[in-house]
Image (cartoon, rainbow, N blue to C red; front, side):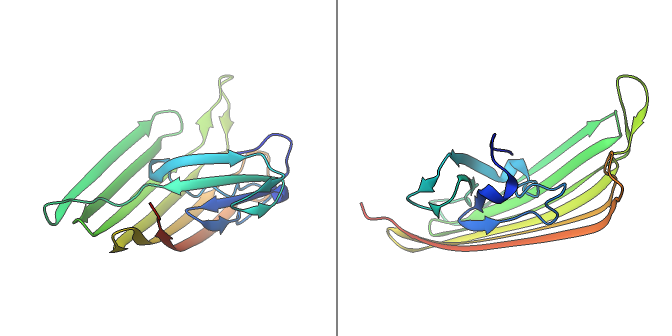
Length: 187
């Protein structure tokens, strides 16, 4: 995700209230480690100032999906997804389990992605192999009638990443992200 006219260092990136930065600014973006199925909303604020986030040239604020709530006691559910693309033998598998009652909820997910070099329209191979897997955990607890405490954790491990037109490839890359947020609403 890029904001036209700004460099990486001019954009502040927030995921669920926590500041995110890329691991390798030369080829990575701050938000490329987040599975798109976990995103609830994306807000881009042009800046040069934001009342919520302070001074800065531009802001990207990502809100993650919440946890499940069930009024009649604990309930559980899950989601499985699989995608395969023949060009580059790319695959993406994701499994998540979630549950909750009327005052708390939890979600645990795992994804596995990978691929090899893909073939361009001209018929030559483009170096683009990769292997990535990530975990996500979300827990929220209603501490009162108008307040909630939320915890989010994400871990991404990437191996054997081939970067086209780059001198060095990446053998191993790991990213951990945590956020703890307390919200109180006054109605």
